[in-house]
Image 1 (cartoon, rainbow, N blue to C red):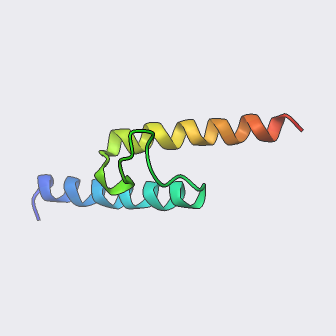
Image 2: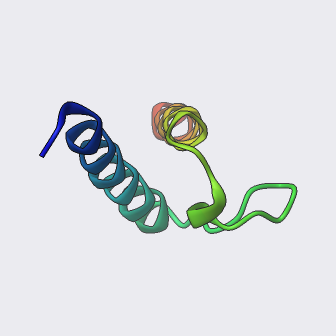
Image 3: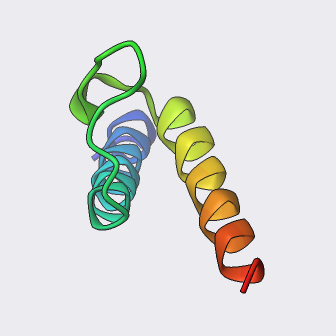
Length: 62
C-alpha cells in the first residue's frame, strides 16, 4: 500500500469515528440538511468540536 492509499484509509477511519461520535451526540444533519456521510473530514472535525463545546457549556450551567 502506498502512502496516499494509507492516508486515505486513515482519513476514512477518522471520518467514520467522528460520524459515530456525532450520532451518539444526536447530531444527524447539518443546518443546510446535508447528511454526515456527505461531509469532509474537516467539516466533521469542526462540527464535532462545536457540539462538544455546546455540551460542555450546558453541563457547566448546572
